Length: 135
Image 1 (cartoon, rainbow, N blue to C red):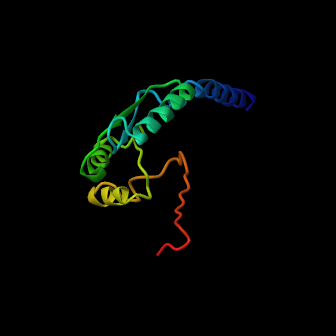
Image 2: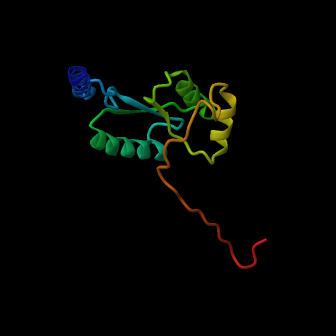
Image 3: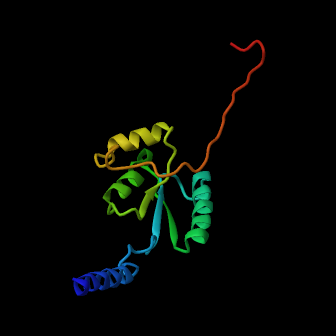
């Protein structure tokens, strides 16, 4: 009986010793693509590149920003839909914009079940003002 317990304990220790080797691979193990539905050089493009640079420094990986403007954002959205669902292709757009809603509806592959909001990068407030006698 003691020999059997010793064998089981030895097997458990061997299993625990190899558990570190078999762990999940580190993320990101290859470049991450951030696709934006805006023109190169736009405010959104500059913002995405600033975010990508910070992510590269923190994650020690490569982040590529691709500007795919046109068709009210549908080109960029379709690019992300066609990518493998492995977390390495992201779509960066403003969810409150009519463009984002149209592009999401126009692409059959983007639905709430197949896409997920992963981060909120920024928030802005707007205000409007007018003269006291404004109509």
